[in-house]
Length: 96
View 1 (spheres, rainbow, N blue to C red):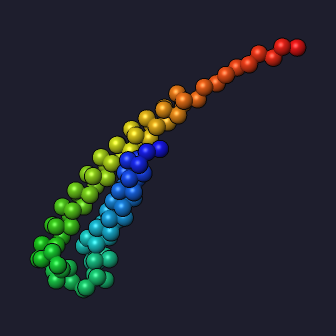
View 2 (cartoon, rainbow, N blue to C red; view 1 turned 135 degrees about the vertical axis):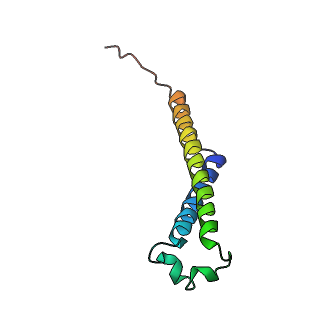
View 3 (cartoon, rainbow, N blue to C red; view 1 turned 120 degrees about the vertical axis):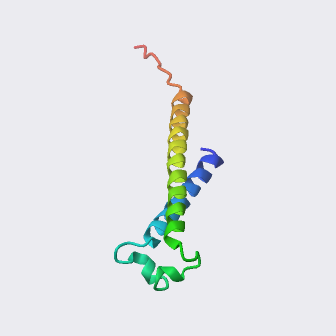
């Protein structure tokens, strides 16, 4: 397998963790996990429109996630086909 494949896997896993974190930070009906990181969501580093910023970040991360899923599926299927081609099966005849 190549370096690019492993790099994409690493980016994919990092993106998964980042996407999980942003989803958990979003405000829910009961303030969710965002309330445990500094109380009210209005006092955030993103400003007063924190919910809108987190929604946009989540949409961008989810889009990148889907694109990486498709790229990795094509890449892994291509690697699987390449391995099948390299297999040379030699049949020997047994003479008694």
